[in-house]
Image (tube, rainbow, N blue to C red):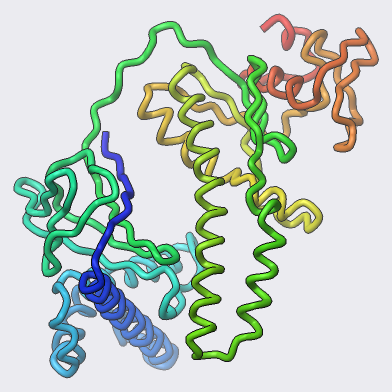
Length: 377
């Protein structure tokens, strides 16, 4: 099984300068190729014979017209601009297939990253000794923690706030697991991050909500600083660090939850929620985004494969919150403010989220909520 891992780097000042140069070259090549394709599309409006350049055509044109004029391109590895042009062409292909939006020009300091490779898949040349990794054209860079693979063919260096990270791919053997693992239903929420059908509750850290006051203070501080000044750069750096801390707290909670579910259960059932539709509710959009529902689903998809589990997406129209988990009675009205489910038929009272998770765990394909077989199954 092929997995990727992202580890923090500990570069010195000279290496940070090299990283920034590589990011600048990648950004320049990406924006140049983007502008070229936009000009070609304008020409095609009047002349359909004009061909949209491929990734190979863009790279040849880059070497002939841009790299030969700008000598600072040669201060970085040759793979940096080549991969940037390739990614730009892929972004346009995704736009034409209506999978993503039209690619925009990159801005300095926003999502800085670049690509490096050495050797081949058969004989990878990017090696590490557990404490350091040897990058092409840069040299040995210290690692914050050891990588699982001793050698790799390619990697991506990226920056988040004031920290630099390396991402690599490596082959992983599936870990040994228990034979008799139960199935579980999971109800994702805002008050609690997740409630499982076995009664396990995972608290929602609500990192954004807890740090919103400090974030507003830092945002005001940035807006009051003069553009281009050193004080503004310092204020922007402080704000970026806080954003990174909030994201890390959210990811940590989701990683712990998804690992527990995939490792200890043979079947994991979750609702196939429409996150985009939820985010249109402006009263709950902030709280929903703070939960990381899309990231939760994304992580479960590859972790269930890693631990040989099965992920089942329950139909989003299934009324899990309106059905009694004890007798199967269906309540047609269950307002969001009611946190305890009380069955009008059998009198069963239970926490709303726990009741919903039990119904999700019992769900099967083709279920009819009014059918008596729901409780029997």
